[in-house]
Length: 240
Image 1: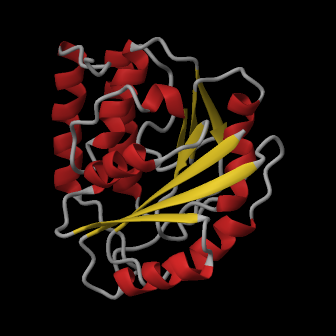
Image 2: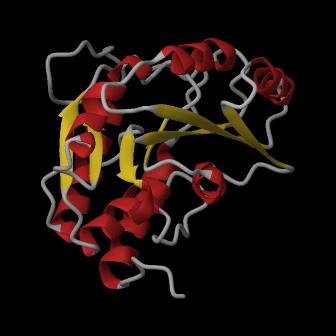
Image 3: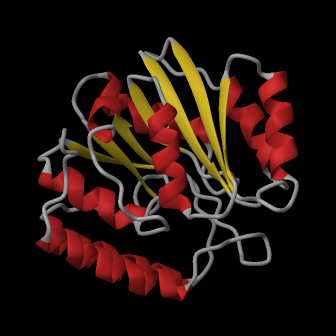
């Protein structure tokens, strides 16, 4: 199997090079080849130059896409999906919150043919988790509960950044959200498609706002709207 690693980037120059080096080093049982699809979403901090150097350094392993202006995480993932060629894909944020060493954990249910998509949960499992913001935790739980009520799934972490999919499924799902609304949108749509969803515990090295965290309270309010919208509207498959 071939794995596509989709990396949306916005002003992550502090972490990007070290992260890509770690992604390249990962060996995953059942995965014969990897491709890294990086989408720079209008960065202004030097990330573009770092990506260009990484493409040269890892020739043939990285596909790079550059947005002229910042459009949001959902828009970046949409661009990455258009370029990916793997049998499976996983979304990797361009920082150290999620550890590429967990790829084998997240991908195993799909590699063995049991799952169509897998969520890496920050709230289950024995892996280490950094302790941070209480109200972020509460907000996450409220959004996950609302999403579960509308989708009839029993996820513990709908908002997780580690989501993996069979590529043939993700390629046929329209991604409408341009920002962090991608997370509840894709969850609603895989539920509509009756996908086999698994969840596994992962490690989590959350960061503070001083360290570059970007999601804010308004994104939570937007997520509520997205959850309700795609509960009411069946938009889970691209029209030919």
